[in-house]
Image: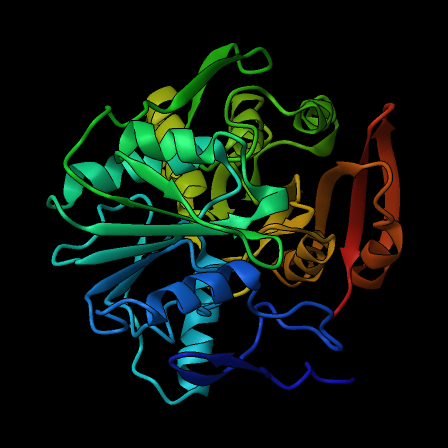
Length: 380
């Protein structure tokens, strides 16, 4: 099988770096950096402090900022981003850069913050408010993003949480903003909450969780199929979000224990908080796992994996993110185990499922989503 492509060389004002995306694939069509990363590095090279400040990098996707800037830490919600950074530090013979997850406070001793503006506006607000509360006055903030991903409210949000914000000229469809922290100007936003009808309970979600303020219609369709899948099983909620699928499996007696698994630290934390609040007696025999899906999970195999997979990698729409979870699920199921997943109808997942499972059935479908049941995992 053809291996992943060789790392590309990123030319920066701070040197040249070999950068590879994580997860890697053969003939990778995407670079490990974008024009927003380049814009930030160019802007920093023109400052008197250059690379010498104690820099906290926020939302670095592949290490394209933390590595050239020799950051004191990377503050991220993404386990995939953390793995990419570790991989690229090793490839460039650089010391590992500490990772602090978004569920934790940013580290002390920071003199400058360099941020990729996140896709979720609520997450952007949470990060700015948290940084403003944690950092001393005078810390500089440089933030950038690609025009197609930036909200029209980006500068206004920075003004609200940080203070006077300067919008700089764009370059190659990327935009740069700068501001200076002067203490908290607004409170840290509370987690979102909504009423989940299938559970008859309220669910909460932290700022960067998928479908944080309403039940996703795809998850709702999958939950309707759970009564036909068995009872008392060992279940993994893969790409768990706020944990609604695993909680529904517990609530309906389908599961006796559940693993809540995601690459987002906020998703895993939200799922676990909902479990502790709604079913505290189940915490003793449930687990949580933050990482690249089930890839590095070392626990016992599952009877059933439930999944509402993502169809994007960071800012890029890409069903590779979901397809790679299928083989992970197959490797962590018992011989008679099953994968039940829901996906948008336009995504052609049947061939990928057939490569990982001997039998693939369609359980349900509506005008937008399809629920698949894949059985008899292959040795993948």
